[in-house]
Image 1 (cartoon, rainbow, N blue to C red):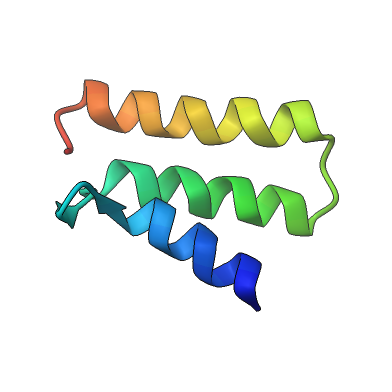
Image 2: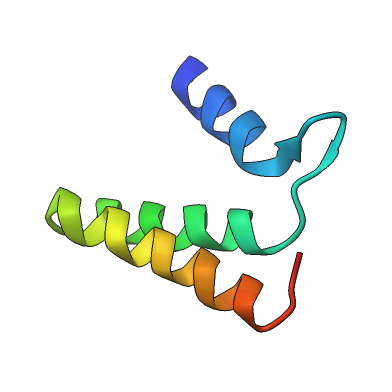
Amino acid sequence: MLLVALVATAALTEGQGAAGWSRPAGVLVGGALALRRAPLLAVVVAAAGTTAVLRLCGLP
């Protein structure tokens, strides 16, 4: 439970404000792949790729 709280805090906040939409979306994609027991490298690459593509599209 403590790990979930840590992940949620890191994913949803940046400094004193909200992290925007791209980081939580990346965490969600990574979490979904992890639940499906995807390889760790695939989880990390998919989460980072999702975040990068969303930021490239202009989402904060």
